Length: 171
Image: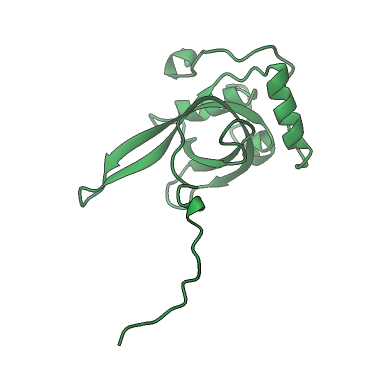
């Protein structure tokens, strides 16, 4: 005899709830910033999508802040997108949570596919930070979000640009 369970009626509508998202010019609010438990000098940045078909979905990005890392450009891109760009004049020790949580960022979301050790294909969320310049509609989404939170920062700029933030912006 096997193990008998009462599985009830399963809700299959949530099966893809955590699947990676593909979308451009996504407006999101940073809801949490924490140190990654497995990688030194790396942040886990949690962001809630503010509008569109993926509204309220959470995206988590892993961002290295190690100044010697070849990937530290992404940390500076995150800060630039949040309208708090890194400055060489600022203190080396900062409260990154106070600086970023509640800030609105613009993202391009894609899917990266790799194979694990067994050869099985895995999909991961790819996050590209863009310059955040909010339109009136985007400000309304951000304001609606701020009604539910204690701290949301919204800028007073005109439109979303198509400029990607990459390493060349830092020269």
